[in-house]
Amino acid sequence: MASPKLRFKEFDRDWERSKLGNKAKFFQGEQVSLDDQYIACEEGLIKFLRIENFTQNSKDFRFIKYDGSPEKILCKEDIAIVRYGATAGFIGSDEEGVIANNLFKVVADSKIINQKYLKLILKSDKTFNYFQSEMSGGAMPALNFKIVGNLDIAFPCLEEQAKIASFLSAVDEKINLLTQKHELLSQYKQGIMQKLFSQQIRFKADDGSEFGKWEKKKLGDIALKVGSGSTPRGGNEAYTAEGIIFIRSQNVNNDQLLLNDIVYISENTHKKMSGSKVVANDILLNITGSSIGRSCVVPHTFTEANVNQHVCIIRVPNDNPRFIQSFLSSKAGQDLIHSHQAGSGREGLNFQSIRAFVFQRPCLEEQTKIANFLSAIDQKIAGVAQQIEQAKQWKKGLLQQMFV
Image (cartoon, rainbow, N blue to C red; front, side, top):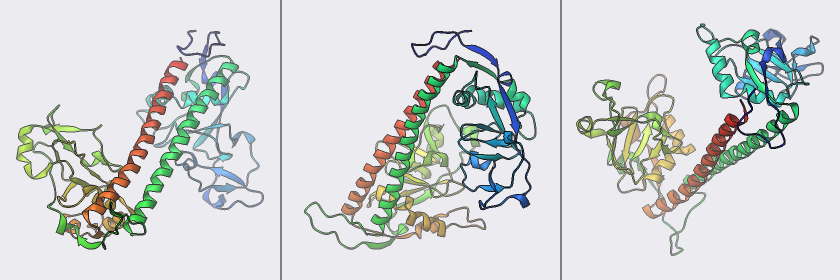
C-alpha cells in the first residue's frame, strides 16, 4: 500500500494495512463493588483504576484484593480505553493496576505492532472521528470490541514504528515542558498579585521617593459607568455576517478579550443599544453563569463594540483600568466577587453589588507601575501559550504527513 508523505530516509518499504482486531486483543476490566474498594493501600491490595484516573488525571485511587486474570492488570506501557459514557473512546495509559469493568485493555501483537505507535494511532483525530461515528445513535455512547476491532490501521515495520513513536514522544515532551512553564508562570503571577494587593511589595516613584498610603474606595465612587447590555431584538437572528462586534461572556477569558468566536450586529442595532457601547480601556466582567468573575480590559487599539446582558462594563476614567482588572482577577478580588454573588444559588452579580465592591488603591502613578509590571508577566505567559499552540499545530501537521 501507499506510504506517507513524510518518512525517515532510512526506510522505504511499503506500509501494511489491517483491522486492529487482527493484530491486537482486548480485555474487559473487573467489576468490583464499592464495599470491596479501599481508599488506602495496605498489604495484599492492588491499585484499582477507574475512568476518572485517566480522563481527569485523578490521583484519588482505590485499592482492591485481586487474584484474578493478569490480563485485567494494566502496566505502564499498556493502553486502556473507556467503554461507555460521556468520555467513551478516551485513550489512557501510564498507570498500573486492575482496570474497572467500564474500561478495557488493548494489547497488540508485539511482533507486529509497537505499543507506543499504536497509542499514537488510537489518539489520532481519524480514530476519534471513527469512534464517534460508530457510537452515534444510542442513548449512551458506548464502545465494544467489535467497533474497536474494525478500526482500520496502517503500519510500517517495527523499526520505523519505534522511530516514529520516539520522535513524536520528543515532541510531546517539548509540549509538556512548555505547559509546565506556562503553569509555573501563571502561579508566579498569582503569587505576585497576592503580595502586590496586600502591599507586601511596593513600588517607588521614578525619583526614588516612597508613594503614599493606599486609600479604601468603593468601586461605585470611582467608576463612571457600571452596566451591561441586552440581547438584541430578534435574538440570534439579529446577528449579522459583519458589522459591529457583539461581545458575549465566552469572549471574556484568561484576562483577555478573545475574538476567535465572535458574532456581529448591524450598525442600526448598535445605535439602538447605545447604552451598552464598549470602548477602549473598558473593564469587562462576567456577571452570570459558570464564567462569573472572569474579566479583561478592552485593548487600547479597539474601536467600538457592544455587549450582552451577561457582561458588565466598568469604566474608570481617572484610574488605571488594568490595575482595577488585575485586582478583580486576583485571589482577593475573586473572594470579593464570590462574597457579593446574589440569588439562592449564588449564581449572579448585580450592578448594586458591583458598585459596593470595597478595595484599596494607590495613586495613579503606582497603579500604572503595578499594571505595567503585571502586563509584562502576561506577555510572557501569552508568549509561552503561543509556543504551545504552535507546537501542537506542528505536531498535528506531522501526524497528517507521517501516517496514511
